[in-house]
Amino acid sequence: MIDRPALIPLLLVPLLALVALPLVGSPSTWITLTAAGLAMGMIIFIIASGLTLIFGLMDVLNFGHGVFIALGAFVAVSVLGALPAWVTADDLGLNLSALALAMIAAMLAAGAVGFVFERVIVRRVYGQHLKQILITMGGMVVGEELIKVIWGAQQIALPLPAALRGALIVGDAAIEKYRVLAMVVGLVVFGVMMLVLNRTKLGLLIRAGVQDREMVESLGYRIRQLFVGVFVVGSALAGLGGVMWGLYQQNVIPQMGAQVNVLIFIVIIIGGLGSTGGCFLGALLVGLLANYTGFLVPKVALFSNILLMGAILLWRPRGLFPVTSR
Image (cartoon, rainbow, N blue to C red):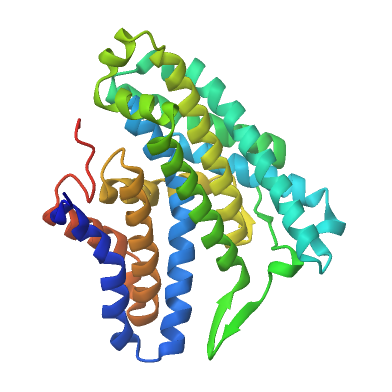
């Protein structure tokens, strides 16, 4: 039987878009803003998905998540910088190949560093939230300094590959090509995560571990190894998000991860701590609202995410899709 109250949050995204249409006025401008908001939301989801996954299973408040985002972006700078012929060629296939290599390298690097981060730092503070916050923030500071040692402290340009520059014209609306790619990548990440979590034995163990860790351990499964694997995957997703965010901003700085940390936590609080579906929905709402308010009331755009989080928490104090065990 369908739980109708649980489905109500799913209507928020189309409702927000419909409310914005008469306020924006021009249908073509509305289409451009909506596409931009959805693309921004998808990128935020990719960045935040790893953190909500880590919190969902491991109950770890990883305030060092931002360092994996920055690491992924800087690795992409190096990979794309080593392939200038592929990046500057007006060939979509070569451009996407270069981008795919950058994404894979970023995910591998972030995943490897995530493994070390979990073994050296996080493992010692399981179940201790205050210590988790302090020690992971310290880890992020150290990580940022190491990034400065390797790539320097200055801002580095990360231009889009040639074929992804410019916009597609749909009627009178312009939709940037990179934003279309961001939407595709975001949907693929969301689809794969939902497929793994809901249709595989691994996903069953992860969801069971969220609900009752002791029960899973009593069945003979090594939950700690599962923890490590989830942390590595979550870090790799942050690295992928760093590539997407860096290309979205078209520049990278060592502090870029720390700058989006607040936005990430707003998204996972809106969605419900530990909920992948809630994180996806929360990211889309944040992306759309930021673009609509940026066009209609620019001054409000600066704190629109805080207003959205406040409104959602007044309605649903545990977020849109709270995980039942929390």
